[in-house]
Length: 272
Image 1 (cartoon, rainbow, N blue to C red):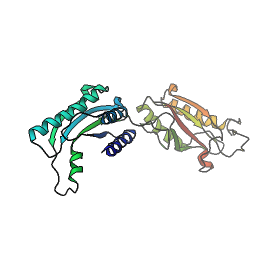
Image 2 (cartoon, helix red, strand yellow; image 1 turned 60 degrees about the vertical axis):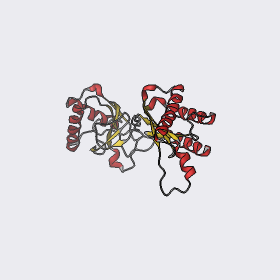
Image 3 (cartoon, rainbow, N blue to C red; image 1 turned 90 degrees about the horizontal axis):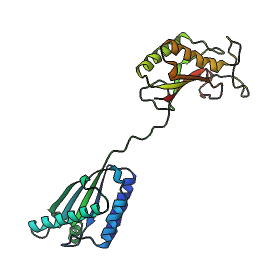
Image 4 (cartoon, rainbow, N blue to C red; image 1 turned 180 degrees about the vertical axis):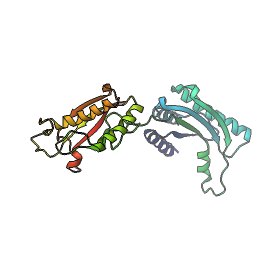
């Protein structure tokens, strides 16, 4: 019986660690007894210590007896067993208001095909403690990379804009890029708390030359100008400047998908 108690305790601790929403712990009693011996008391204490009490939503306590004896006696004995566990829990700091059920269920009848009647009866002389836990808060999401803005972005998300690409050496927005930015502006007007950095990128320069020359300005500022071009266009579409920053990253962040995809602009979410 002691071995079974240790197994149940290990099962309980394991399941609490896995944040299960309900855990059932059983305490077994000798024939006609409802008091806990020292070993049982220590196991109940260990059970309590394994619980994150801040997460407990409710506790239900159900007492049982084996199939022998009169119904009136069994209901009283099973109720006394349930009350013993309740008192033990209260004595170890569990709040009374979360114990929502304390009930003696009386006897548990044996099934007809039981091989070991003695063992079955020993398992039926017990109290089951069902601990219901409050749901855990949703896990914190790690930033990801997406090809479109979405309403449930988080800080750190990268929005890779497939249709906002540039001609080689140019920071001028194409007609296709402007159409994409128009859709983005409508989205940003709807979700007014999203803040972001506009990141400009380039391709096709030597590794020692991090930035490229903008053929229109003839200055080595191409990725910076690409980011600024998107920034200016969104300003023209009534997106407040306070929601945006812009920066050129040169050739330092290639996607590895081909040079045409490195002539791009990304948004990185900085606030929501």
